[in-house]
Image (cartoon, rainbow over all chains, first blue to last red; front, side, top):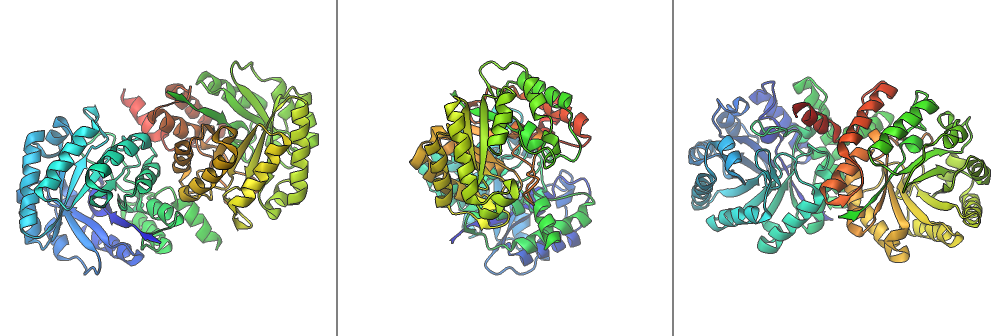
Length: 300
Length: 300
């Protein structure tokens, strides 16, 4: 079976916009369950301004308390060089920078123009490379921007090219607001794979309009083997109106497993971890597979 | 834009297993809304034993009361020759026969062995052809059977071949219990398209395990242009444990429209029709797109 890498982003992208504060201990408990289910790649937090994103205020403490992870990786999002330095001080060895595709979205996300965001991204990528850190660069709002609408694939390619030229190890194509359709993603990813190769690309989808799995399958068919997802489908970007619901890890793991890929994740253990989330968030949590999965487990 | 045909099966497959009785007037109201939204192909009822499926007890009356439909088609499901004759007496000119892939499922569905079901299907198909009716043949449980598990694609092909040889106009590949994954469907449909051509095939998916849109997109990529779906995602087979939730028409129409296909359906009018279903069923109804769609409409 061909291996795929599932990068669990729930602790960052999933939690950052939750209304109810999630304590460090609760994050560690979610992480422990996810590790127990077989997940090995985590975007664990972001070193952003705690006033802007209170849920990430414990970034440094969380990074210091992470359990050991064999054959895996903890990545922290860093918005700029200051964030990068805080991450490295906290022991982080893998970072992610974020570049949005439009002027307005960069302004809203990090208070930078597009040109400033590119320059800032390059500085962090180069610094990470010099420090022998692993560096992922997100091209966010790659399919559509909540403020400026459809995004030209040539813009996505040009931004990815800049980040790779600066030394990024991986480009994550992020449909931040769930605006993509599979025809568009087929076209965009096909173009990027021809330019950079599938090995340097990851995909990050939101299920806002119900197409998360169709998009993931489109990427898989094109040869992409690195997927972001969020346990329980937690998620949404606090600065992007309409964004809600990352693609759920359990939906992605289930589909890819059924389709014959080796995700390394045990579905029963993952479903147990998802059900445990409801105790933290005090509301129904879970991807599309959970109703069917839980009803089957009750029967057996 | 390339045209696709959406065959609305909510009034048959969607309603047949609903716990609350849906009166003929209510069916006509749902139909009127769906026609208003631009839908033109309907599987309207089934001429089955009313004791087995009470929701379809009004099949003859409903067929006599159908509004005129320009450039469209009303199809009725017929389980056997007796059902076919009742359908024709009620003015039906397009029928669908159902053949399940396994011994057990045919027994549960129509109390026939697989051999009897094939013979019965051939009789109805030939009779329909002689009468110049349009005949669709479902190959049901094409991806998996709730009693016998995975289904050999060669079995599906052999059954489709029998029905086409008898004179069926169209084969509908039905994942009756939502057991398919996109890799499997890619393989199965590829095989059937090579054997019979995409023009004679339609697909019928359930969203039980959240993969409905991924499956539909897989079919679209292979050249299939005829899709079944159920308004509001209503559905489930009363004789197939675990079956629930047909692929929602609004999800399919939205995805295919976004991907550049001409569905002929107006999303605003369709969303209004879906919201109206809640008054009939007294519970939340709707596909994956509805939350996003309704929140946008409230904003605008």
